[in-house]
Each structure stands twice: as structure tokens, then as C-alpha cells.
Length: 102
Image (cartoon, rainbow, N blue to C red; front, top):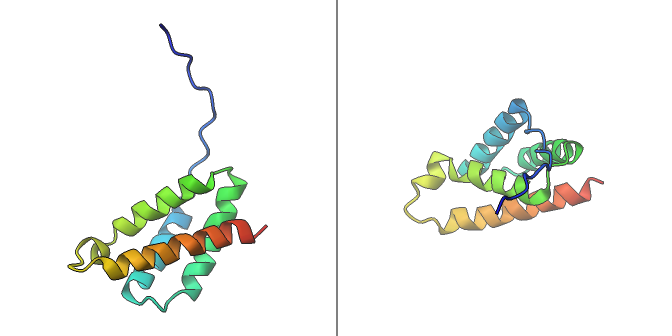
């Protein structure tokens, strides 16, 4: 039995400059959890771009989790609990800016 080819258009990728800015803000946040002003602003830019390019919020969260997990301090932590708490805050912040900027 043949399966129909999925013709759903793939959303355009997030701009490399936006990704770099988010990575930088995530690194600053991982090193200092009180460093949220730049992070929130950068996530706002990411959310604006994602909405403009029809990137679904769950795809955005997957991207953020991948970027968070790629940070050396997070990967190499002996006690991951603080970073898991920070990730939960990051996800909440991302959802807030994604839906709050409308």
C-alpha cells in the first residue's frame, strides 16, 4: 500500500542571527540565573520571528530545549536539578512571550 506524500510546507528556519542571539542569552542565563532581562527580550524576538514564519510553539520549545541541552555548563553539571529548574522557567518564559506579544 502506498502512502500519500505529506505536502505540508516546512516552515522557514529561524534566522541564524536570531539563533546566535538566543544561544548567547541562554549561556548568560546558565551562568547567572538572575540574568533574565536579556533572555526575555531575545525570546521575544525569537517568538516574533517564529510567529511571522508560522513556526508552531511546540517546534520552538523543542528548539529551545535542544539549545539549552547543548550548553556545556548544562551538559557537564554534576547536579542537574538547578538547570532543570531553570529549563522549566525558560519554557514558561518562552510560552509567555510567544502568546503575550500578540
